Image 1 (tube, helix red, strand yellow):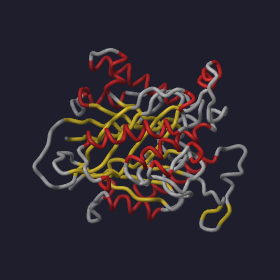
Image 2 (image 1 turned 120 degrees about the vertical axis):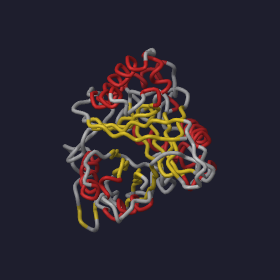
Image 3 (image 1 turned 90 degrees about the horizontal axis):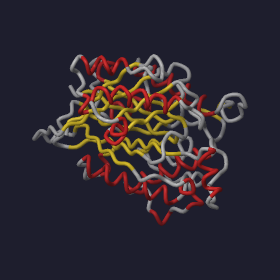
Length: 362
């Protein structure tokens, strides 16, 4: 397997011009594109339609470039968008290509496995059904990536549905109960179920520890490599599993670490070191992409000092956290085009957050 990583700037949620230029210049073969992960400048909430807008724009452009149907695009390319580019965060997308090329080298290099669940019913969102579906998809992605040891997995991005008003109405019409009637509040349960699905598949928790009542509540159960997001633009869950494996012809490695809080610059360095960053070379030129989750401290304090993230009635705490962490990471990497997503339910211990980095091999 050979995985390519191409990060592009976006002037707006529908701006696909940078990818078009790469394709026209022959730097990216559209036939090889398997995934797009990006940040849009929406609010990151249940009513953030910039994510669907961005997917629409990329689908329309790639339909022309590939000469295939509009519907076929989403069957062959996974699109994962996170809304919210607060502070210095820059709207962007990272394009992943994948080919079958291999080497005989025993060096561990980047691999990528992709899987999708079936469509979830509204009453299944945020439940054990959601957990099991994601766990199965993660296991399939692990096999596809050719990873034997789960310790070689460094980042599992899962994007799935939350409960929209229409979904809740559908459940009501059929006499089915949902985990919450608050669309924005459903993100906690959806992200949590997906995080526990990753943890189950990778052996970080066992299913006998889980039940509907622990999802989004018993946060001491978690995965250290899961990064989950929920949006109204999806009906199924998309799983993108990244790790390192021998025989990969990729020119990249991936590593991860756990951020102790939103100002943990040392944690950023640990992720880069874990990926194999060459400290004797120009770091900025080696870093291909960084992916992180951001969370407000449950105590309302950072390093002993009180903050207002959880008590601000004007700005959601996720937006505070994304802005803070984005600035910290950018201060280390020198690049504000970073994927920082809010909400860490069952993604590291309470108050902590995962971070992954892809670096170019020297």
